[in-house]
Length: 405
Image (cartoon, rainbow, N blue to C red; front, top):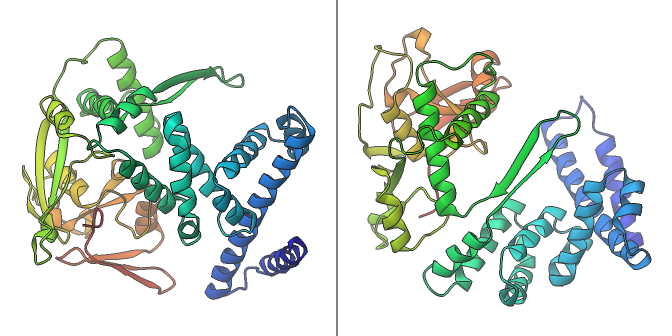
């Protein structure tokens, strides 16, 4: 079986290696698919070899790291091997190249977040979805597993929140190369959101008029720099009791038309929280409601049309755009709204107005492509977006949808 697999992988590697700059679009797409199949096979072999080494050495990460020149990859392979034992069907799919190592990482992360008495049950639920995983990206598989975790909770989310609150962590290390102290960790959704809102509010209050000297010009680096300053300011006790954080509640009325499900409400939270927790959170925040349907804003607070009075979008416009675009408006772009620029579809210098119907959130990379690389975008009144690339390819996407109703 392995010999047949190896022959197939050799054929795929040769096919990928044969692709050069003269390849057409379909040939490049086929090569990308072939390369993904090779990568999945390599992931499976890496995990299998880690398992074999574990039989020969009480500290298998050392010889693996030395051979592969990466301690991080060695630890990852051994972790995947342990997860493979708990989810044998998913492990078999990895060994046969039908899923990637990232799918095992999703399973490992989910299992690490449950209490010991529930770990076996969750592992069985994950393994039951091994076949589904073969047709999903790792991100889609993660969403499915999160849904399984929610179904395991039998008290409307209270036990899940309690488990998340016990799982909070905070760590640091000193980078020997730079001397910088690095921090990382995780918070439960409730306290994590409170902290994020405080940081956002402090950034807006400190740097609304001007940014400090030394601030990076790259938008992503700039955002990270300002958030770091805001967090330090909060830690020093400045502004911790300042203005109330803002929570945007999006009411999508699509579900109210004909299917009997009623409107869909997105509370702007990463997970479902109990009513008692929501009450506590919203009692400490300014709650803004935005009502949308099929990408159209039916109601949003504040001025949404500024005409030619200013080039920059105001808070109300950004709030409304965030309600209908969680991410960059360009199809399949994963960059979140807070890391996007608000772009004038009809450019400001060409007479474009700072009105909601002319504004679109796009990430830095795509903003550059629109302005400097000849990308042409058109936005219909119903927010159907048409993108024409320099090679003549046309991409179209319907009205934005936050999530399935």
